[in-house]
Length: 185
Image (cartoon, rainbow, N blue to C red):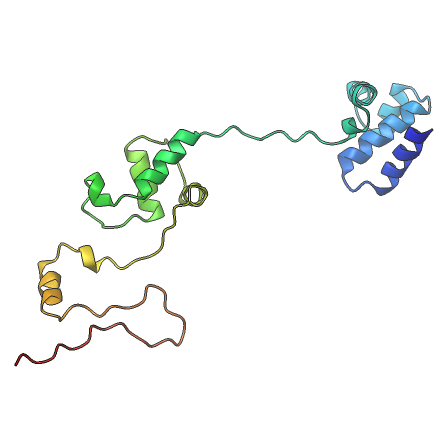
C-alpha cells in the first residue's frame, strides 16, 4: 500500500518525463494490467514495460531515476592535459618559435597539432583545459621581446614606444608613458 501511494504521488508531482513514464508503467502493472495494455496506452514496447517492472522489483524506487552515464570518453588523457599546461607555461621562444613572443589560444592549439600531441583541439576546449590546470592567459603587449633593433635602441635611449594598458575602458584616456629623463649635467 505504501509503495502504491508513493507511486501515485510521483505520477502527480514528477517533473522528469522519464521518471513519470516509469512510475506510470509500474503503477499500471501493480494494478494488474497486462503488458500489452500498458504498451498500447503508454506507446512503448513490450520489452520496455518488462525492463521497467523487473528493474523496479530488483532496485525499488531507484529504478525510476535516470542513470546518467558519463557521456563520451575523453579523447585527451589526464597526462596529455598536464603536458598541454606545461607547454602553455613556456614561451614560444623556448620551443624554438620566433615568429611570436606569447601564446594565443589559437596559436597554442595549432602548435599542439603540429607537434602531434593532439589530432584536433579547438581554442575553446583548450581554454577549458588551461583553466582546469590553473593556467591563466591574457592579451599582452609584445614590444618588449621584439626583434626590432630600432625599438631596442629607442628603449635604451628612453624614447621607447608609448605603453598603453592591455584593456582600456571606454573613456579612459590615460596612457603609460615613460617619464622624461632629466638633462645631463
